[in-house]
Figure 1 (tube, rainbow, N blue to C red):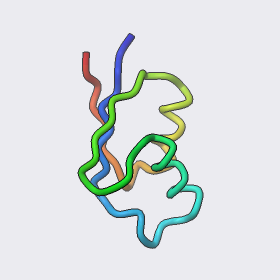
Figure 2: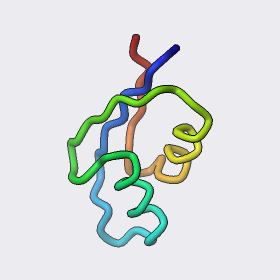
Figure 3: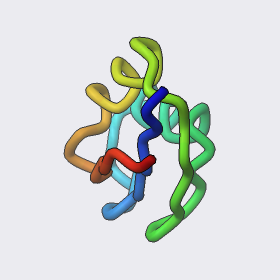
Length: 60
């Protein structure tokens, strides 16, 4: 199964509360944090919520 490398590029300051909670749920705490998650619909939906704050790459 594919995996997603998610990197936080922008700060959560000034964003909505649900976007802050989504970043925490993904495991991102500060700018330049990187996490690798399984490519599942739940994770894709969370990334969709914070697309303006993160970048996503597919990794093997």
